[in-house]
Image (cartoon, rainbow, N blue to C red; front, top):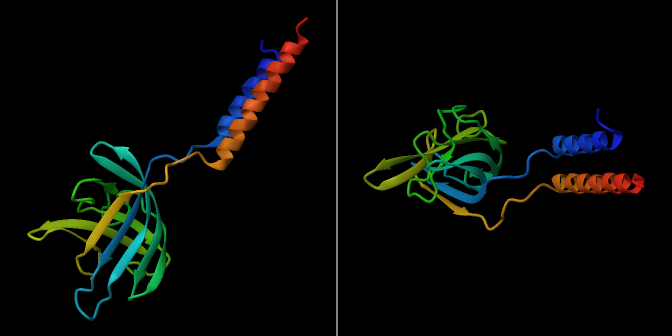
Length: 185
């Protein structure tokens, strides 16, 4: 049977692990793209922001996105979230950095606080190879443009709440050890 000190120690470790949750993980990339209007009846589109991606064989799987998409030559739409792979337009959300073709034909899908490219707030950015090289576009009636990605100089770090809980857990361990040592004759 466990004594009170051992039980307290185990309970403190389990509680701090359960409450801490995961640390921020993955690689952080800055991105930007620009899609010219194919003709005067359509609008040009540009976007920039940050991608969070986990390394997978052959590249990265994008797991988070933030930023702004600008349409109609100046109307900003906040990027509100990432759409899970295969959740819209067959997207894969794979980033092949540093390869020349950064996205595949299935593309990267996300939501915006606006109409998006489908009228419902969804956007799929994808690439296609042709005689001009690698071109990028969104689903819908927009032109073919450029997409650029660069590693961010911000390195992922644990969330502040994780650090607080880790500190509290360590303090609890010290208190339990001190109490146990004080009880010994």
